[in-house]
Image (cartoon, rainbow, N blue to C red; front, top):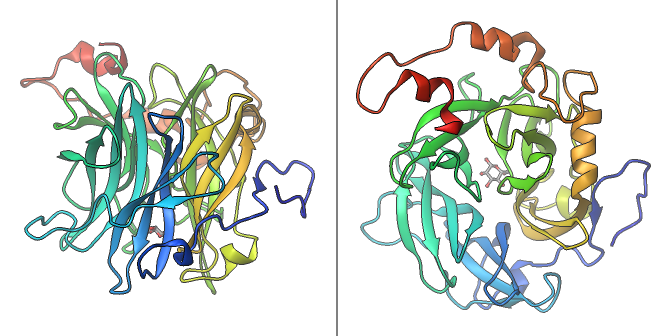
Length: 365
Ligand code: BMA
C-alpha cells in the first residue's frame, strides 16, 4: 500500500503497484482500460469487468480475473459485452459496469451509449462467459446504476442517475427506482442531490460501486464533480442509506473522501478523475475499491468500512452528529432540505398498481 501521504484522517490508501491494469496488459490493442465492475467469482477469484476503449473510440466490457485481486490478472481475449449489429441501446458503446451478486447470479448494470444518449442496461450472468439481457431501465438519459443485493417488500431496487451531463443547468442527481420483475421500473425517488453550491459535488453526482449492506445501513460511495478552469475534477463522497427504506439518507459526508492526487490519476485521457465502480470487502472489514484513473487505467485503493460509516456521520452535511439516526436534512442541500421537499409531495391518486398505503410506506409492502 502507498503510504507516501499518511495524512491524519486519510481514509483511502492506494495500492503501491497502481495502476494494476493498463492497456499494455491487454491481449489485443486498446486505447484505455478503466471503470471496472468488481466481484468475487463462483470460485472465489476476483473478477473485474473492465471498460475497454478501443482505438476507434468505442467502449466494450472485458473480464479480467485474479486469484488475489491485486496481481496476476488473466484478461479474456475477447469482450463479454460489446456493441452488436442490430442492437440500438449500446450501439455507440458499453461503459462503466457495476456488478451485484444475488445468490448464484450476477447482475451487471452498465451504461449503453445509444444514438439517443446514454441509458442503463441490466444484464445477468452466472459465469462471466455468457450473459443475457434483463431490461433497459428507462429511455435516455440515464447512467451510473447498480442493483441492491436484496429486495424491499418483494421489489428489486436500483440506484441510478437519470440525467447525464447537466449541461443545460439541470441537476444530475441519484435516484432510486423499484421493480417487481427487473423489467418494469417505477416508484422513483430522489436520494442524493448534487449540491448547487460551491462544493466539490456541485455539478453532478453519480453512484460509484453497488450499495454495500452493513448493520448501520447501506453504504454508498458516489462521485461528485466540480468544474474548474482546467477541466472537471471527479472526487468520491460517502453516504449511508436506511436499511429498510433506502430512499432515506441517514448521513452524507460533507467532504470528499478520495480524490485525484497520484500521477496516474492526474495524467491520462481525462486528467483529474478517480471513478470507483466496484468494491470487494475482505473478512477483516477492509474494502478494496477498484476505480478508473484518469479514464486510462484501473487502480485499487483500500478503505475500512467502519471508518467510512463513521466519517459519514461525523462529517454529515447537516453539521450535526447523529449516529444511527437519519439526517434531518435528508443529506440534501441545506436550501432544499428534505422537509421542504416533502411539503408538496407528488402523490398518485388512483389507477392500477397504485394504492395509498403502498405509496405511504412503499418499502414495507
Ligand atoms: C463520466 C463517465 C465516465 C468517465 C467520467 C470522467 O461522465 O463518462 O465514464 O470516467 O465521466 O471522464
